[in-house]
Length: 380
Image (tube, rainbow, N blue to C red; front, side, top):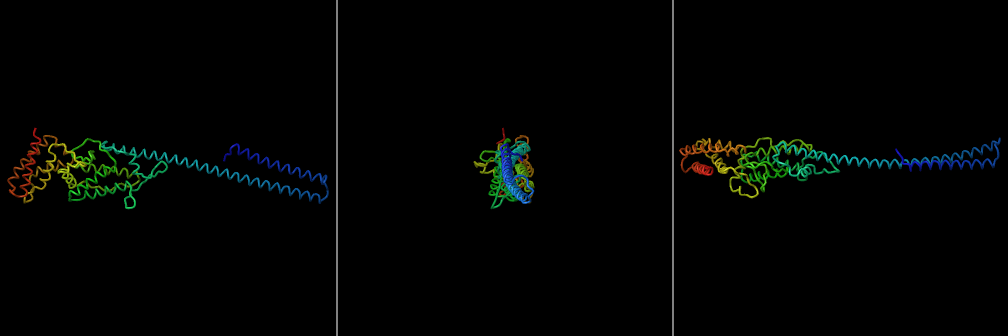
């Protein structure tokens, strides 16, 4: 332990003062004793008195030294306590500085992880506000507090961002497992998908594709023909954030997207719902909605013996609406002409098999009408 110069000088002055007082007191005492009793005597009583005097003097000196020692120890203890408190303050300041630096590094690594995620998906999207997303994932973190782990919470009493998004993805997983769909369920599915897009705070940057869902005029990155692409991307983002927060991966949405929910989305945007101002689907290919109607009508066209009518035409459309890349091929005149030729030929063949007035006959007539509309729309 180091003392400053003022403290050292004070200690020296105290020691010198006590020494001088004892020396002066001893000199006065023994001088007075010598003057009163004379020179050295052979009298035992005189020596006895001198011994008593000497004993008393050393008792006083010993007491004074003891008191001085105690005062010094108290002083030294106070100094040690002050030094300890000072050291504690220094340690706390160092810990705060270290915690702040860890917090800065933790946020920086989080932002780097977001950049990596964007690059993994060819920068088709960007995170709108990485700072806000960090605060959602780590709500208790700040310059003076840092936690490396945040567990997902989703209950009546407590819910955080990780838990809320996980619950949304689990609900989506249940929806995609349904074999039958209603308009009400399709609307709810769209609401869940758009909600997830907003929760993960992404902005779609890639070019618009036919089938992309627009919400309030902005592309969500959800495509009605390639629903699995958005789901895979969302799951990857969520799992990356889960791992960064010290959690296991989300195990749901492990199955491929079945035909039913994707067909439900296609059918939803065929009708008047495409006039909705809030939610729209991009459709720039001429006659795309007509071909979608044909797709569903041909799916219903069966003869009484359950043999398919216009089977090849239906197979072409089934492959076309498999994903957005296949839909984009409809821009190729050769692909379009192939479908028209096939459907016209099969319509003529089906007309000889279907009884007039039957349900299949009315469906067939509607298919013929839509095919003629396609031909007129795409005729130069």
